[in-house]
Image 1 (cartoon, rainbow, N blue to C red):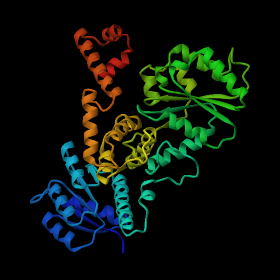
Image 2: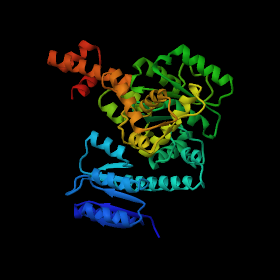
Image 3: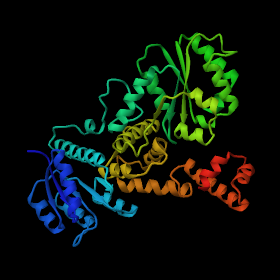
Image 4: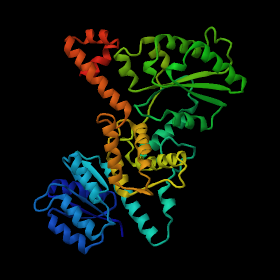
Length: 431
């Protein structure tokens, strides 16, 4: 017998759509349009998961969740609704909802979350019966045929990224990598370094402060003397590099004087925050640099793209912070805490999540609940004027200042000249 799902939605058309989706995914499905009838089905039957709407006549989805969880707390529940505010989402997670989806529906994400919740429930039941160790369940590791640690690669999109990154390891000239703010470039550099390759590669992560003629020449000479057969420079925040620095980079790549005596191949990975064509259209990148960067581009997924990785990534950060603080054991995450982390926007990606976990470690608890994480969020918000990170807080203040200057001068060009910044930045902020 297959795994069984109960669907509760008073909209008959959407109820039928959900029924078809899960039936085609080989689940056994019971569906109800009346919440009261759904309660009887739930109490009398055995279900592996429930999918419910929020706004229904007679009983809300939140009330239904509370009833179900009181009767059978181990059965996971997913909420699908047209609109839910943040307070309602938090309340639902607190009641035990394992996933929240807003219409229009992402079918793949819904099915992926369904499978994950059912697997987690079954693993929990095995632990209770003594047939599985809790530590083994919580420490997920992918089965990719190569080392990859940037993401846990539990989500399909992070696995796809890992596989494409591995295939690109022997790219010939230059590579553009779209790295949204908060991307863990150090982890990506380490993964590149760990890939097996045709030659002995050295990967060096550079920010703008390290790109000058003397430093680059010294780095190249020392690396080649140590036997590295190919040098790859990963340029962080490449759109902030000056024209003079790009001139130097192009001389290195093309082995022009004074780099014409270097025998080892040299190539670059340019990390930009947005698609290169957009930066070119906005004239952030000029013609020569655009042509030099090449046409091979890969985008690093954001945490929102790989929601199923967030809980595992948080556990990694907890382990790392526990070691940094000489704790005997890292805290674990309750299911509500994992769901809470999964539902957050994480605009600052891995960097923001890591800062959040760094604060959470000070809770000094063996297991963190959703309420613990909410207190962490409140502390971070009060510390930086409503933002979740110092960078985000400073960016908020900057944007407000730029808007004020543009309004006062009544001219974007004049505002850019006054502030000493590029006009596209002012236009983007004011827009």
